[in-house]
Image (cartoon, rainbow, N blue to C red; front, side, top):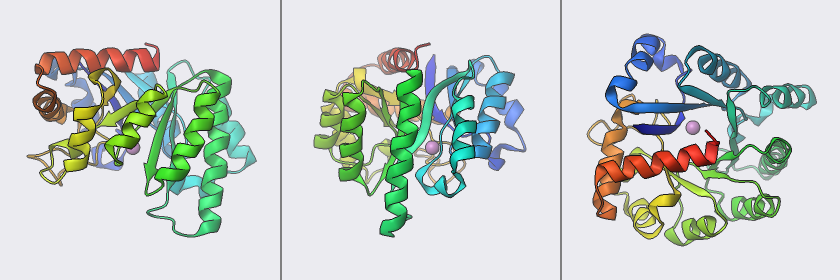
Amino acid sequence: MIFETHAHYEDERFDEDRDELLSSMHEHGIGTIVNVGASLDSVKKSISLASQYDFIYAAAGVHPSDISCLDEAAYSWLQEQVKHPKVVAVGEIGLDYYWDKEESIQKKQRSWFRKQLELAEKTGLPVIIHSRDAAEDTLAIMKEAYAKHITGVIHCFSYSAQLAEEYVRMGFYIGVGGVVTFKNAKKLKEVVSRIPLERILLETDCPYMAPEPYRGKRNSSLYLPYVVQKIAEIKGVSEQEVADITQQNAKSMYRL
Ligand code: NI
């Protein structure tokens, strides 16, 4: 069975067929799903989905592009949410300098990133990191997290193989999704070839990032076999081995 480590099924693009789609996961080889919150609303909806389906778990955290919703009250609410029995990670949290170029906003992002890492430190939960155009600052903050024994995944990894190896040395996982199937994804293919399979997690980030041959369409966990196939090809191992090992990786990180 495939373990989907990063999905957003609360997204309105699944309103039409959410239940039908989720009910068909097992028969298509998808065993477990972690639905990841990115805003206060999606955290609430992720926990509600996790409560509804036994094979779905939730992650609770606020995405760097959504931090304007955070204040002390929202943070204490979040602190309560991470105690829910089906919440298995704090995320997605991190830095996104692609959408926010202003220094004052970037500073706020760093502050809320550190504050949400404290939730992980207190609860012992792993973190799901979103990082875009912010390689240096993310690494610096994750080194602090590593020193505090926080574990986790750098999701939708978009940086160099060298940087991936640095995260792997600290015991973090690297999230790989549809992008690895794109023709122009040279960098991510190099990442996959250089890091051990034991450090890779499968993810879709659906409804975004559909793999070839569905690039640009609505993504879902049902397309993960295309990602498995590409990783197997790069690593020179069987698709079964990729599915099995990445499933073990996810179970061990999320402690399931
Ligand atoms: Ni995401």
